[in-house]
Image (cartoon, rainbow, N blue to C red; front, side, top):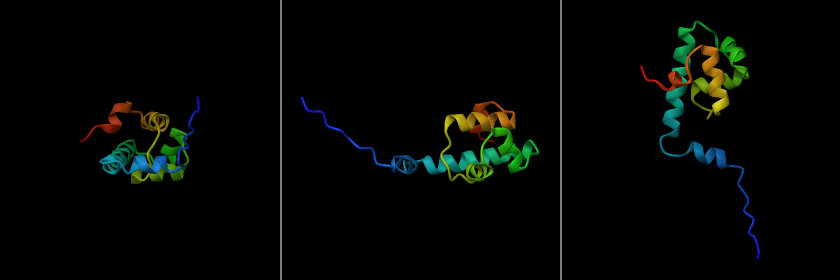
Length: 91
């Protein structure tokens, strides 16, 4: 029996980002994170330190230009002292 091996292209992450609705969801998430940070009266740098992410990554999150992992979102929620679900609520 011969097994086929498949290679995963290194662009799989960017392909997921191109799925319908993902860009809009990332933009909305970024706006929500910015809103919650402002409500907490934190600078972007302070929030990044609390979340244990690079400040540049925080900027990308708020701009909706990155697709965060669950671990990153948990850190963001903790930094902003909100429940994880609150990151996805609309106001």
